Image (cartoon, rainbow, N blue to C red; front, top):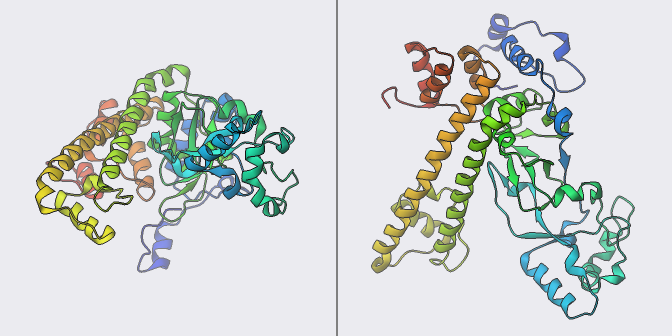
Amino acid sequence: LNVRAVPDDLGKTFDEEARLMPRERLSSGTWRFENDMLDSIREKMKAGRQTLAEVYGAPLYGIKTGLNKAFILTREQRDAIVACAERTPDDRSAELLKPFLVGENLKRWHVESDDLWLIYTPKGAIDIEDYPALRAHLGPFRERLEKRATKQEWWELQQAQANYEPHFAGQKIVYSDIANHGTFSVDRAGRYLANTAYFLPIANDGLAAYLNSRLAWFFFAGLTNIARGGYLRLRTEFVGQLPALSPSELEILQFLGTDIQTHSSRLADLSTAVQHRLSDIPQKPVRIDDWITLSFGELQKVLVARYKASIAVADRDQWEAWYEKNRAAAAKFQMKAREIETEINTLVYRMFDLTPTEIAAIEDSLAGTSASLGVKAYEAISAVEGLELSPDARARLAQRAGERLDA
């Protein structure tokens, strides 16, 4: 339920706007309080289509360790275990160390790895005595590991999802379990996942594009409760219900999905490089996620306020030139990504034969859960139908998006 403001006279508003609610929307699952048009749009989406789960199988979830501190390693810890194993004959500990992602690493269109590693010890798969380096690392945690809720050997993962291991090691579409926008992308590096992440065992950029579309988010928002900040819980049973696209439709989105993931990854790499370089100023790690929006003067203020560090006057011209060059490059990546997203959304709306009126209803319903499309995006969508936005519709859309009509 998306409530934007409480009216002054709640009783009067209820009398004027209350509608009958069909009994079928009040099931044992999530109750859907929405107008008939939104419900009819979801039914229209489902008509004649299989679900995602029917085509690809239900989305799968990641590994539960039972004690993250013991099993999840930093790069330094991983390297120390490998070095220890190399000094011991026949110690194969390094074979059980797997690259690892948690839900927070899964961003929209790309993965931001923290270079974490997992000690992968499924139930009944190994004898810890054959892995001295791992035994030495896990030993100090033994007492706590033996107190976990489920029954397994103290060195074993609580839920290793061993049946999924071939998929963990392969390419797949990954996403976080809780998000306020789509966080779907293709993991091509064969990384294992925490239980705060889900995945589909298919590496299809067209499918990733569809899953990140506004129409898909609209569908998910009708199935799960919307928490503060527009966050949804993307559990298996919700994502699996999404109507699937045909192979020919996925092919149409394929290039766009590849292109936007490339631009998003490059932007993320650039942002990481910039913040790494900025760390030279205070001589400690710098994290300024919104650096792209800051002028050089604003950046200096943030460095002083947050890190008690400033750029020497003699060096400021050189730093400013470097910073503004990277800001301009980042802005190009962002602009290109926005253009591609608009094209993806336009194509997905067209694939489901949605009218401009239906699209406007969808966008209005999403206003509280994600950023709205701009006027130009609506015009592009309307053009698909061979229609044109009326002056009144353009004015209302511009007001909601905070845009100027002559922009």
